[in-house]
Image (cartoon, rainbow, N blue to C red; front, side, top):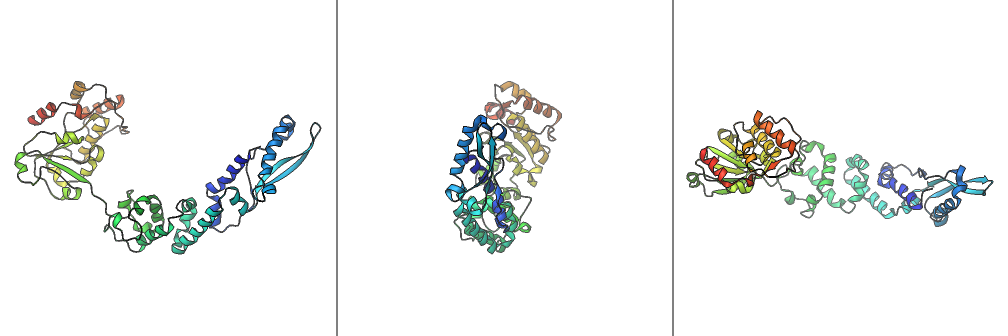
Length: 386
């Protein structure tokens, strides 16, 4: 026989799985529920552990409706044995009323608040009924937020102007961080409330609901002394949209994975260096029209991820050339570096045959030579010879 704590845990599942709350939402009357799999004792061999059986039954009786006035009810069956005589044994445990159920799991106040919130939400947005049926526990988890949530939903449904505001300047009467701190629940609600007004192909909150977002900055460093006289700065960051619109004069562009390597690239005639944030953030440079007219050089870590980034860049700009990312450089400077990046791809279309072979070699051995471990003289000499 299960203990009182175990019986209570089984009853609590009706709340935790949302079944009780869903029934409430559709107005279904409470029905008498059996507690499943209560661990009935083997009547045939009851005499072998009769003391333990009686002890378990006594614990359940003390916590039953019969004694407390509320809670689960016990049904009995009487059996007569030659060895132990006639005795009563638990046959069934039920929760007969909604009041009993809520008192057992101490959810009376929470359920009252739940019903109040349901009425409030439906009064404002009856079209959220299906959402509530799918997410009854979220109504409870956000019990003290529904007044603010409704304000946010009302704005997006009735007044939102696409791409006009940053998230913190939205004209909604909630504190400035409320939307940021509650993106998950707001997103779930908006998906249900205004599916025809969202960008369903986007996962990012700002893009999905047409909000302005802080723009990615591209860092630019002028490597050519002659170019330096034409610009007010030699090292500057500009919004991606501006970077795309306006060509920066140069014949060659050097891109590095590591920021410090970007900063220490030597001077080079008619050349600039750019840094988009490192790693696969190179994707921000995927559609810069004026870059297609430049000779692009890429210098990244010598590992599977570095070559995957090189491949990605080549899909944007086919004439991209790698610097110091070959097996000769690797064999010359490698010590014992290991990569912690998992690259699932095997056939990288941007790599030539030799590079692809090297990629598989690095991936199989999980090998890595970070670019900053290559002496500065190497890149200086390479760039002189270009």
